[in-house]
Length: 155
Image (cartoon, rainbow, N blue to C red):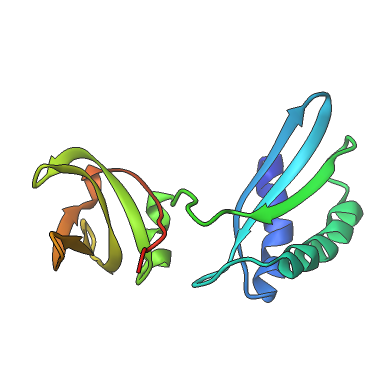
């Protein structure tokens, strides 16, 4: 088990207990200083400053007690961001959310699609998109998706 996997295993349950999701953990060296970055997200919502403070206060003592990072580091807890990338194997977690999909091969002449993720089957996803002011449901092959991220829906 890698160091990052050990950290994730340690902090994921307490983060989940707050109704939040651990999105990503990274340990980087920047200008001679080590940073442990913990990115979190909230299903169907935005992360507020109080939630970042709560997560920091919850996991900081756990990390100190476990002592699995041998060097001094700075803990940086933050939101994954409004338009953060989506790991393709995690697409089911984003049902009913507005997503940006980049395709490897054009679908009906388009490489980029934005819409509501409404259904996921074994090999396909369905998106509700707007095409020329009309709502249209598209079925996309999962193997054709190059990249996905959350998107901001303009209402």
